[in-house]
Image 1 (spheres, helix red, strand yellow):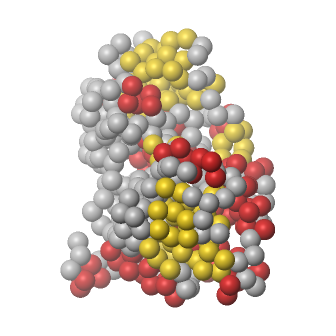
Image 2: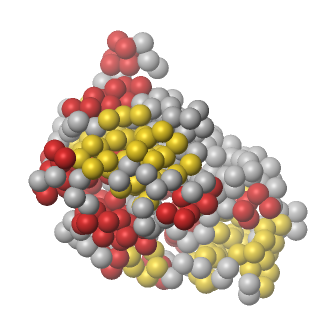
Length: 421
């Protein structure tokens, strides 16, 4: 009989892993039923929400960054548009609003969500005094707010960690600096980044570079400042520190899925307790996790979900064959960081190795340069959208970029010289 694999969640991770599993089953002639369950009619290219508030070409409307999810379902994947209501790992069943589905293996790709009501005073001001760009609706409302802004205190605030794509707030700061400059109102705007981190980023070498870059742009950085409360004129931290604003752009707290906690698989915030190397659940057998709903110590970004999908498919097929899962996930993350005025920085890192300078993906050739602002890196960021639609979601391999991070072309001597590992 065919083995049944249920993939829960029709975002990036769910689509990629379902398509890859179906391809592997055809290639290896395996009796495998792959069923993807989700309830999102439209798929949003999430990096596009960073550009939407600025009405950049190719990012002016939601139609520029959204397509029908059904367009990306490959052969051999059964797609069910249903709302998931419960997961039972003992009975190996998943309940939806349409019925109950049994499984032999389960893959959780349920993503994470912003929780506006976790911050006192934020819900009452959301969409009026306070805005965001991590959802399509909030990004559009922020675009309207920026058009009306004529100067004053513009505060970009990260409420707490973890969040999806932790460099996105820094990219927004750089892009809004460019936007205000082009409008001729940068000189009468105080631009502030407020973060719970000790600096602009979590990795020391990259943090030094990004912090210096923001300071050079005249950005005020308020570190070690988690968000506790929002009023009409200021935000405050648990320690009593306050920062004023005229326009607040905030990244609310993030949580995973209640389904994961209800099933006894989570950490209390909806993030699944996950073995960071095998991507297996630490609480149940025959359950794998990938993407934003894991609790592994790496970025919650599309590139990470794509790399993790390779490991999940590999290990799930090993278990189907009666073999043990292998510890192949290394936390590989690859990201273009927009720095404004047509330039970007490329970073490539994993659990153990932080971003360093060098060439990517080929040593000495590149053509991309790591940890340096270049025009080509910006073009790489823009080129990622068609790659996302035509290669990543259908589960195709991206040439020269593997699921495990390569040391080729990286200046590892920089870490040794600075005393980092």
